[in-house]
Image (tube, rainbow, N blue to C red):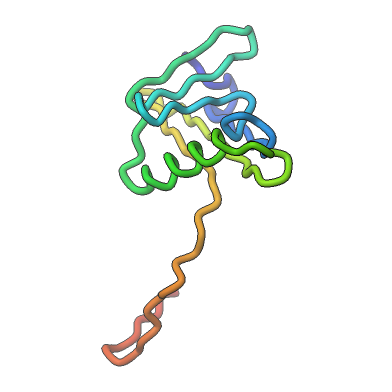
Length: 115
């Protein structure tokens, strides 16, 4: 499978009124499978799509979107990005993650600055 001929990557923004947050990509959390329909109407399935950092956030976003009754009012878009690196593909899920309410801002043990 070739993602695109020129740049080797594609990003599809989500839609809040789509069943799974996106009309092109559909992620199945129980099987860790990402499917999408290519421009030639061929359905492509990527298996073992797992996010080591944030899998719970992805699962929650998709399950919440699929269970919503009024997606136009309460839905959240879920974007997807694919990058062709030759020997492997990089898959990114673009969701809103709520900020951590309890951020430690104590400077009692020191501070660090990076340029």
